[in-house]
Image (tube, rainbow, N blue to C red; front, side):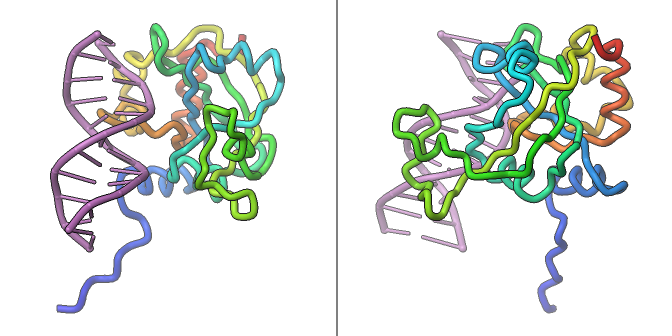
Length: 178
DNA sequence: GCCAACGTTGGC
DNA sequence: GCCAACGTTGGC
């Protein structure tokens, strides 16, 4: 038997991406730790480069799949409670993550050569805070969100594709924009 | 602070 | 190319 041709879409994350891209573009969920960079920080700054991502799957989303204008759920991880707190949008295409070249940065990566950068990041602009946080346990208990990656056990990916429907459901659960 | 789950590294 | 060891994420 000849080996079957390996399908393009493999694994739960790739499947999710394909499902979310059905209508051309995705929405996204991006995790951030409150004590490192919170929704308040994003609101204050207006826009920020989403640097420090050191995972290929997450990087590839930024490099290959994000389009300017895509909406982003901002998720506080390592928070009490963890959950979605606001909305952002993709404000630039991916460019090299210069923190990887900076020896003083906690994101320094000697393997990223400035002439051939390994890590890239997009800019994210603030859109709104939600009236109330949509905590992880609510995400888990909401039927319409059963296919979200973030509620899956052991899922640590810091950037995840989200469908337009899921995005809307979460905005509604959060009471809309503050 | 614990620890399950995962991604990465490096020896072979 | 396998896989054990290690480091990290992130909920609890």
